Length: 309
Image (cartoon, rainbow, N blue to C red; front, side, top):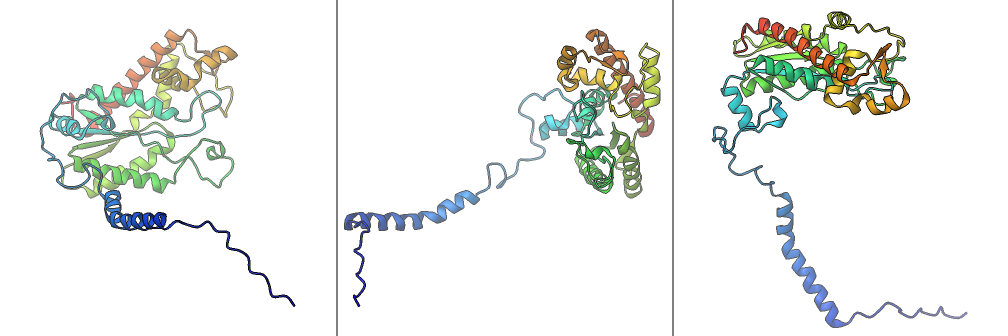
């Protein structure tokens, strides 16, 4: 038998000088490693060290907005101190609304109605719209949740969000927390949260109120009929009607697919023509004003205010 031949070593030879440089670089890396790790773990600017004084003066003019998420903490603080001690918590939803309306229908409507309410009150700011709301049981058919784009949460989750958000607003210094819901499934959970927190908050510091007058579809449809808008619900599966479309057009016409519907010859809803556009926009604006007036009156009654001051 022949002894197995040993294979020649074909690995490239590393010059001694290159090996020396490699060792030096490796050692330098080990020395720098703690600094690199420390830099990665260092808090971002403003997140540590000495926090800003909550009472520090505002260095620039305030933005003119009633939406808390658009304001700095100084602007919110100064608004509360100036008398804006009511906060509106609007709840919307993300669900199917047929072939024409965006899934965020309720949220687009609230951009108009909540702002109108706050400005008519004169003493209110608006918390960010809560968009995740109950949309039905996920495992039950048929239901809204089976339509792609519908995103719902359990009633318990929705109530938990309201139950957590409200004490935070109370801690901010708001004296009245107002819940308004643009979707039917939001109403009863809001009632229950308001009742539970009212029973818990017995110190008189903050009141919390659900306002059912905001969500009044019967009177809303009557208001439209009095102005010549007589809808015939032709498709029971169409989650769409004139009031929603006209208000959403004020926020953004693309949310009702205005141009696409005009091109396709579908610029109508429930037998009502949406053209001419200026008429629909004018009715939408009047409707927002009417909803806001009803809601403001109900809020003032709930809070004991009479003039928004």
